[in-house]
Image 1 (tube, rainbow, N blue to C red):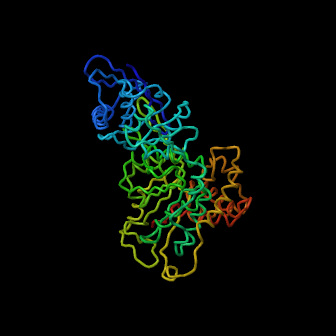
Image 2: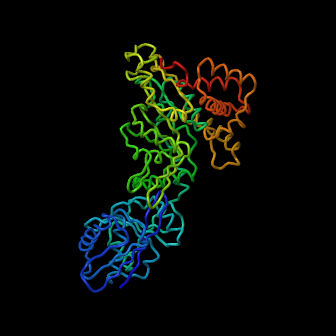
Image 3: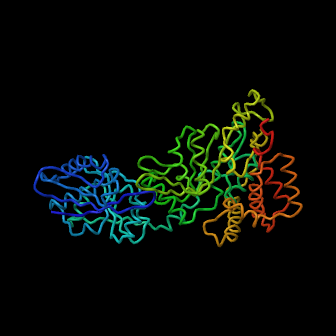
Length: 512
């Protein structure tokens, strides 16, 4: 008897429906065809054990399983339940009349229980698109799949529940999530707040400007000055995620298997902080079975690289294109996948190997030329993509012990949101542009016009401070953001002066 069941394969953040054809005929062998990998081939042993332990039998005849389309490689253990359901139906142990209305996915344990799968959300979106009535999957993934409306999502714990459901012996209760309610209930619910930080008002101001314009930022200062503490609080002042951004971010985390059973939607801006020993592939994504990297997991949020010069140069260099294009393209011989990576890059570093160059109290013990050598680990092209260079100085005792209440993240976020609204109106005809940091050089010339006095100030600053040519556009973009925060239509002298202040690493002789 020939039976068809339906599963799905995930490429990038898109799903492709896979038809599993099971045919039972005279013979004794088990064949699985259609470019399965080792994990799919091993499914025979998991399926046989699971069926026996749940009171069913594996047919002692020739079983041929075809996974179509046959030219796409099938990877992973998530097809176990799809194949097992097909085997049960083909051998007459369950009714096959309703099988074509459901998409079925899940990894089987030897006792018939189900393990979670990756990519449940994009699979559910594709299932609805193709007109399936329902999606049967492990209970741990039910909440993320139930975000999709107009699709019955059934979370099951073992294969017996699936068999009883198709035989009509047991009804399954669909998982129901009110997507909008779920989204708005936990929107912008962050554990940390800017009010936790004592002092450092100039750094908070720099991060407010970065958040308002979507600018990348690097924090330079000695150990213990609060660089990491400040960076971790940056997502709390970014504009709240829109529902579209939330769904897009959730899809990436779903594909990577990073959502817990309790999660349905990612409702806060992601904050990813990989260790400096990270490989190139882990940072930007890839592998033989391509997976999203840290730069994509931070999509619509913040990627924080602590101790930037300690990262491998090759890992940092592969970030250059994704930072510019806001997506990662991974090409293989037979296919290409795209992962979105619209992020704010926040980096931190010590000014020198010992950490105390330019320290107000402690003396730097690095030999001559060491500071410049340390800074040269960061390439010019990468530094070119960082708009704000912020020097962080240690907090003194009086500020640390002060009882004065610092400004809360909510108050800062209000100003950031207002500035972003101004930018949204400005870039209304360009839906791909959302913030000043994304402006092209031509747009900078058209939008960031300055008067004669401003031109003179910028000319003097570039000559006196030895600012590089690449600093010119960056200063104008940041000045435009400062003007937006101030509610000014034009870039004033004070806005330019503040923007110039945030170009430390471009100054000649900064590193001695």
